[in-house]
Image 1: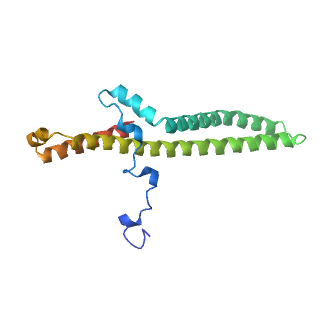
Image 2: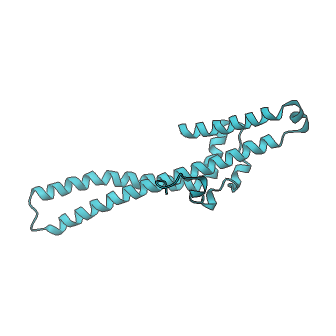
Length: 168
């Protein structure tokens, strides 16, 4: 499509329902935002399932990455001694090396998918908290502060969350 016409917003695939910004994880409603460490602990608690999945994927990826050089060394040693008599050992070593490589690639891709998805859910939750706080201002506060300034603060807070995400 991009070669024959200019891509537009309607050409994008639909956003999965579970990543929709209007849908948020319930734990973000009670997330403590007064101190950075308590906010980080609260965010990790709300995102605990995703965090555990990412940790599991990194462990699998790391173990697969560690076993691959051992299998390569074993396969090279097998080829150097001319293992025609026991070819099954060489075949099994080669298959194990292939399985380790595939496991490493798949677990890393799942880690990245979970990390990007979690990031979007965290941004959705924090933006919800920022906007809910800004919209809950008292009448006195709203009269004291021009609406343009409130919108500017909300945008600045949202941008700060986005910049912080990029650094993490």
